[in-house]
Image 1 (cartoon, rainbow, N blue to C red):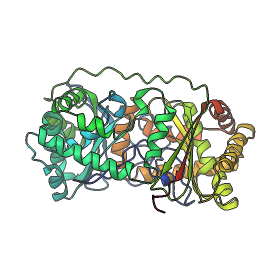
Image 2: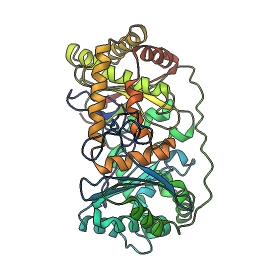
Image 3: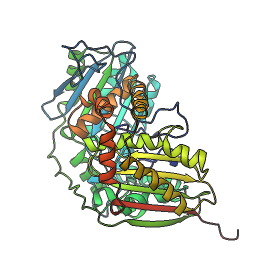
Image 4: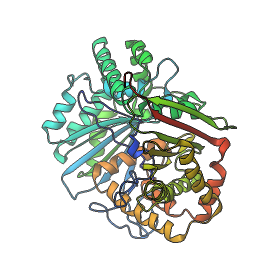
Length: 485
């Protein structure tokens, strides 16, 4: 079961690896510990979430289910606002989610969405360079931002009496970001250094880029989130200004606020800070059409930073949060989630050809990929590991998954759901993510039922439909001996 968002580490001068999960967290399914839930289970409730009576269930929630209550509003300039009160602690969390990601970039100008994530902390009309961090931290809060293929999100958690500060900071940079040569050059250098550390000089970094480059044909998802060195170097102030005007507009964003506030008063404050920001013409929708793959694709990489071989196998699948996607997510859990999962038992414990295995679908809003990644032990043979993986994929195509196995996954999902949404920040981010990605923030209350509604027959059907050799891309990565060794 996938998280609808992943929070990257961002601080002033810190480095990111947006869109490039480490080998230990490739898919929906964790394999290091049975007790560790897979990242990303959406969640109903713990502290701060009441059980809804059958006639008063929160938006989209099944009757009697734990659910997040929220209201939706739209300002005159098109800014969509989602408010969810929670008075259990004197804090608030705000998530401003812009409908722009690397898929919106054009050839020769890759990396802009992620570059802008950095630029948005470089100061605005009433906030000096770096002061956004200082003001939040000095008032007892925390903040971050993250970019992926489909969206860019910024967020803060602050004491409830600092709601005005959070709204002021987000509104000021939405209205009047400072874009000049000095800021641009500084942040291009920061992103390029991030690329050197996180991709070019990192074990398996090039592998992650090669997966999308090899599997996809459409440029929207074919290129990496972080972009190329050449494209970043070629970025001009005019390019960046045009990107800001096109995508960082109120009518291209969702603001979600969760925490200790009164809805009417909070909405009045949001109108005060945001409603005067002018709307912009919405950019044209990106063509995400992906032609059907008709033959297997293979690529091999030699990696001078890797110390062990790894194999990555991906299959093209439908967009995130569609019926087949939910079934494929649960299929990934059967294969790889926890130490009792099928591939972990087979590859790590029995055959001892791997140290870890990772499975699951990614969460793109367009055509996605189902990923099986195997961290192999030194000396293991690619052909042998691939055969072992293929055997288990075929087994899911031909044999029903026992109900006990599916029941285990349902229990894991519910626990993970509660954990991921017990804080106001998790709820704010997910409400904004579902609104931007699927035009339905109520999915925060209904997604779990979709995962838990998957049957053994569903798993067999999607495994047979998508796990075909002609729909497969296989990447193998070998350690490369350094010169002189």
